[in-house]
Image 1: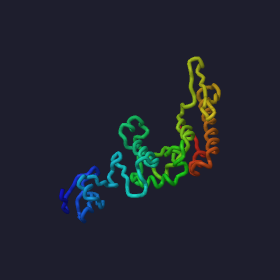
Image 2: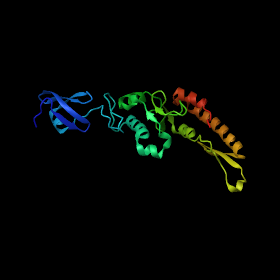
Image 3: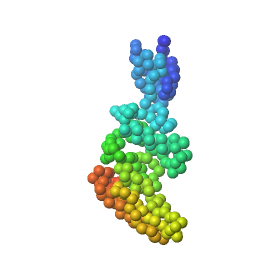
Length: 235
């Protein structure tokens, strides 16, 4: 196949225009202005790739940089963020994510990977990306609002609903049992009137959360530690 300057070819990441031919080295331009030099055979096959094409949930793209995507932990974390924010079925199944979004900076995988590799806990087994501990009620994934936390702390924070930790049965005659899970097993806190049971549960949870925060202090982001020590319940 003969190529000519001005010729347009379809690729998997958009249409390209041939703007220069130097033997087997072909310079092409995407409609977004990105230019790249590729081998003639790859241009003909349409296998040229645009690193700025938004191929991940319509917003995410690889970008240009040193961080690879395939098989990389940073890519898995990044794709997970975009999945939670922009996968329609996920949002339907998890309504609390209806208004959650990812900052524009992190639409570029290179930017997220650069940030992630500099974070405490990023490559530690059992740590997850958390967007809520620094800013209560947070709706945006961004460098300013996210940290990596041990799953243990994430689990404690995730069980903060008003009714969590207390339960009742017909044979309790209106009383409520308060209990809390710990790393050593479930702790029975007693049986009380409902509001008292809730208060006992919350007091224990706050105490336990701060104990575990101290345990993890030297292995988590300092901002996260401060937020955990200042944590309080919001009805």
